[in-house]
Length: 225
Length: 332
Image (cartoon, rainbow over all chains, first blue to last red; front, side, top):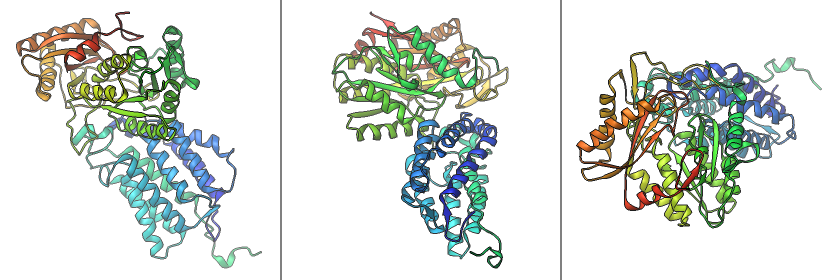
C-alpha cells in the first residue's frame, strides 16, 4: 500500500510481481495478437523475460528502486530477445536511471521516470506516435499522468487516468497502418488489428494503477501512531 | 502440431547440442549455448559474426567454419538473439583484427545488434555492422521498417568470409558486404504456412489453392495473396520483380540462388531453376554460378525464394574459394 509520502520499494516489487502474473495470464492473447500482424511470439517472449525477472526479485538487495529497475532491464535485455527485449529492457533501464538511489518514489518522480522511459523506447525503436507500436499506449499514459498531477489528482487517481489513456491509445492502434516493426511489412493489411506491443504496454500501466492503489480510507479513519 | 521434438522449451538447446555433436570437427558451443563458434580460430583475421532467430537452419550456425563465419548467435525460434550473446561471441572469437556483425534488417535483430555493438565498443573492441536488406517484396520507404534481409545473407557470409580468410582488413570486408547487399535482390513465396513450436498453431492461414507471393522468412505476408499458379508463372513474377528492381541488365553475369523454404523438395527447386534459367537467358543475363537447396528456411514452410547477385570478378573468385561448414562445403 502507498504511504502518504510515496511508493516504497516493496510497492515496486509487488507491481513487478503483478505485471509478471498478468503477462503470464495474457501470454496466449498477446501471441495471438502478434500472429495477426507479426511473428506470433510476443506473449511467449515477454513471459520468458518476466519469469526470469521474478527469479531476480528475491535475490535483490532491498532499498534502491533504481537498482531494482536496472536489474529488471538487464534481465529483459538478455532473456526476451526479438524487438521486445531491447525495447522493454530500455524502458526499465531508463526507469532505473530516473529513480537511481531512491528508496521511495513520489508522484513527481514517477512522472519523470515515465518521461525518461518513453524517450528511451523512442530512441531505441525510432517510433513516433501513430506508428502502431508500444509508444502509442505509453505516450498517452505518460501525458495523462502528468496532466492529472497538474490537475491536483492524488497518485491513485493519476495512475488510473494514465492507465485509461494508455487503454485508449492501445485500442486506437486498431485502425492504424503499421510503420515500424514486422507489422509494417503488411502495409494496409495491418489495419484492423490491435498492436501487441501497445497491448503489453497498456497492461504495464494498468498493473501499476491496480497495484499502487494507495490507502484509500479517509484520512480521519486512518490509524494513528 | 506434429513435430519431432521432445519438449517445446528444450527443442532449441537439444537441436544445438545435436548440431555441435554432429559437426564437432568444425564447431564448438559457447557457454550456456550462447553461440556456436569455430573450433580453430585464425589469429589476425577479421572475425565474422552473425545471428538471428532460429528456425532458418542451416542459417546461421551451419555457416560457421573455414571460409565463412567465426561465430553465430542463435535466438529462440524467429526471435532475435540478445546482446549478451553477441558480446560473448565477439569476446570469444575476436582475433585482434576486429569484429564484423552481419545483421538482417528486422527490428529485433537491428536493436539487439546495436546494443551489442555499444557493449563491444565499451569493452574496447573494433566493431563494424553491416545490414542485409535484399527483399524486393517490401517497398523500402520511410513508412516501413525497410526491406527484409533474406537470401543475400547466405551469399554475403560466403563472399565476406572468403575475403576475411585472405586477411583483408575490417573496413574492406565490411565494404564487400555492403557491395554484395547493393548488388543482390531476392523474393520469396509460400505454398504453406509454418508453425512456431512454442505457438503450436500455424503462423498464418493459407487456403489449399492459395499462395503468398513475397513472403518473408518468418511467415510474414508479402505483396499479395493469390491463387495457385504454374511454376513458370510464379518464377516469372518473382524473377521479373527482382530483375527490374536492381535492375539486372543484358550482359550481366549473375549468381542465381534458388532456395527452399524448408518444406519443398529439390525436384521442385530444380523446376524453378529451369524456369529461371530460361527467363534470364531470354533477357541476355548469364547465370555463371548457382546455389540450389534449402539454406535459409522458415521451419517447415513449403515454397522458395530466388536471389540474384550481380557478379564482379572479385565476387566470383571469393565465391569459388574453399569453404568448410556444415551447410556449404567445397574446395577442401
